[in-house]
Length: 262
Length: 248
Image 1 (cartoon, each protein chain N blue to C red):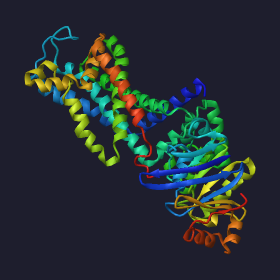
Image 2 (tube, each protein chain N blue to C red; image 1 turned 90 degrees about the vertical axis):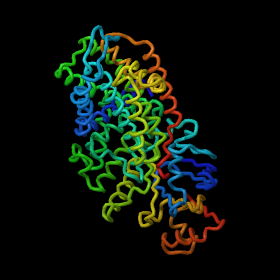
Image 3 (tube, rainbow over the protein chains, first blue to last red; image 1 turned 60 degrees about the horizontal axis):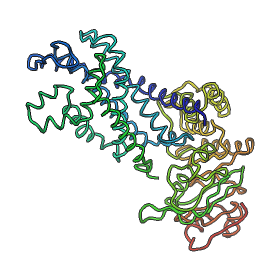
């Protein structure tokens, strides 16, 4: 198989993921409504309670809505990554995963295609959210919208590969609700998405340490700095390392037999 | 075309296949029969590489599945028992997706799609969502998809399940036409024995072992029965240690 075959395969898998996304309009709508509710309702209420002092990468005092915007971008990536893993479990149970695995191309590559396709769809949703946030008055530097792209893609990959690891561990579709409670919410709330880490330190050292080592925190910080044209080296290395680790675990634990009733 | 040699497979303590040998000559219609739990699906999962082999060797078009799985998959087309079409995509989109998984370029993929849609008489439905197709047409589409990359061996795992009598007959006749006109090798698994012709090569699995491997009519004469149904019943209820082999 030549490089062209791999490219055609990637385009085919991404095209399918995109078409499925476009056809499920409610999915797109809910993916946007969730962070917008946080931005418009939650952040407006918390603005008075939570003052944010001058901190990197912001050069001045900022309103709370500005602070949580990168976290809400990552929230979209998180929910989509998990939605992607749900679709993998669904595909496995419904049998359509077999079609993918009958491809003569290498299976790690097929998984990579799937994860990359899910990530690209997530990133498109983030930009739709940023466009509405811009209209609402949250305006990062225009260049930041460009520099944020690779950061968003890397974080999307990290969360999608994490979703794939979970998909491999989940035996049945019904167990997915547990993922919401035990993965999505702790990842989101124990991070710097809603409040800076120093605020967490005031609340208690264990909360701070849990948040500091949370992969989602590193994703949020990478996006936060990238959105203002700056590179956060520490979070970048964390995200690169974790994406590689999750990817390896996902490839190693991928087992079609589970739940197939072969 | 397909060589299965001394293949055994266990799920924990349960032995699903025990030293199974099957050989399919190039071209023609071959049937794999067996009661529920005989090991047919396990054998197909091993041939297609969806299950990792434990013991024995399987070769598809001379490619060992254990060592050259990707080369083997290139020669395989499969219609699974469980429907595997994307219902929300159109007929053509389903085919193009499959073509991309086989690395076919856009132009080649479109040509292959048009060719298979014409062969399956589905051109008029090309832009319809799969959800709108009836069961018979969906199966035809799955066959079109399985043939898109021109495999040498087509496996149909209980593909006629859920179809009405007319659709079943049409599907069976259609696959036989493919064998005649394209020299394709077909492995057809079923519980419906009226789908098997007297001259077909038949392999019968029972409790994970091959208990018969011969022409359907030879099976009847060997068991002293009039119909394949009776022969199958006699073989599977009194299989014991007897193994029947004949011309394949």
